[in-house]
Length: 389
Image (cartoon, rainbow, N blue to C red; front, side):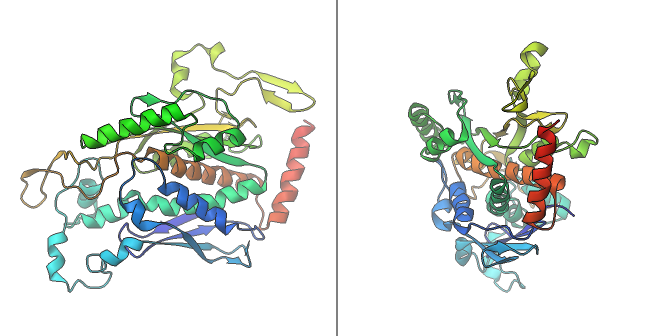
């Protein structure tokens, strides 16, 4: 079946649950590192009060014994601390609390799944849509990605990321290695390298929030140590760059993805775009540049993977937009469910883990086995063959 996961749960329900299938046996799990990723997702300048309530942690409740995977499906639970305030409204059994009917949502918010989901699933209470479509679900996706990046780390691959832009403020470009980049971005409230840009972005978020509005931006994920040949050119749905793009755009509020120089390639001549092929005894075949972000023909080149995603501004505003009541069909200004002025730094963490998942999935497709020992043998043999090519 390969590597896959499912998630379940609502934003104000008791918990989020994830089931991961396909992780090989005998992989050591670093539980602290798992929860480092959960905490990273909640950080970032511009987040709302919900992040102060949750204090996320992920608990593994199946598929791991004595710190090592068994080959069975891995079950992960992320509790929702806010559930205690929603037990009547989100009651799983029959609703006997008629006084809570006033909490039924009949006014869809622009920019959310409310109206589309209500129409599609024939729901007269739009809470049944927004509870699942909420970005809260990304906590479960980060937990799954955190397991995937531990698999990648076991084979020498490292994952990191940074914020490229918030609103109309761009971070200066850099070509730092992840060893250089990660300490700087982890120390930054907006996940940028330099403090001057950080201060400008914070001030900009504050001014936009004071005006009742919100901001989006662009984030970047980098993976180093990736071998050549993950993915395939033989079918459209086996191209790893295409699968990564689909995964990135599936993140809440993400509306685009580019790899390497991305859309800039459409403004340049061919000689300014393609990566020339080089060879030396130390590195073997490699590229002189990495404008293609580590991909050619849907396959990894052995250079580092560079992926960017664009996140739209959060649509829940203190300056509400116009909509229409589904009962009365009368216009109104959309209600506020909760609001972050800017979630771009947190979205950077989500994207890291989503991209890591796709790379780990392709890695296991290429070198898969039922145990880590089997995969290591397959991987070693492949690297030796590539080196002698």
